Amino acid sequence: MNYTANKILGPVVYESTDPYQFTAEEINFFKSTLKSYNSTWGPMASKDNKVLESDHFKKVKEYVEQHLKQYVHEILQITDDVEFYITESWINCLEPGKQHPIHTHANSLISGVLFLLPEESKLASPLVFGTDSHEVFRGFEFPYKVMDYPYILHEQGKLVIFPSSTAHAVPYNRDELERWSLSFNTFFRGRLGVSGVNAQEAVGNRLTLF
Ligand SMILES: [Fe+2]
Image (cartoon, rainbow, N blue to C red; front, side, top):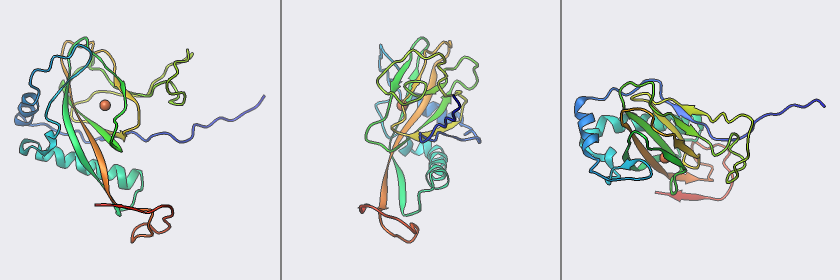
């Protein structure tokens, strides 16, 4: 009755450890993007889905792009033949008592979340990953003995990056404070499946996107 068991495959979730320091002007800007959107089920989201293109968020965008590059080229080890770029970015505000149900991001390859507010709170809801304890039986809700969803605590200025197909959620906001975050999606341009300058042993079907 001996055995070994190893978890194989699965997404890599990236966390920045040099939290972004927001200026008062940047905080005013992201608050202003959220024109009243009365949500009965989940977070309020900005109608503007290009907030990182704003002049007010130039430094924020730089911070996000530098970490995105590290995730793509250092963690995933994708060569410089391919570049990932931000396609859309928006602001979320989760009011007390609301939750953001589990979801994935369609039409995107890599997604990320930057925690904005509260500045400091022990009650701020974490970012939770997985549809079940193993992220294997998607669509089924088995009664597990242990439901240890991986999660990342909400800390102002922290950036989290993960594959867009990774299911994630924010549990009920039990804080008295609103929970603010920025989300973004990406796509890529470059050459796939070619023996390019940087891809030494590339195989497979070829695709080039500009
Ligand atoms: Fe999301």
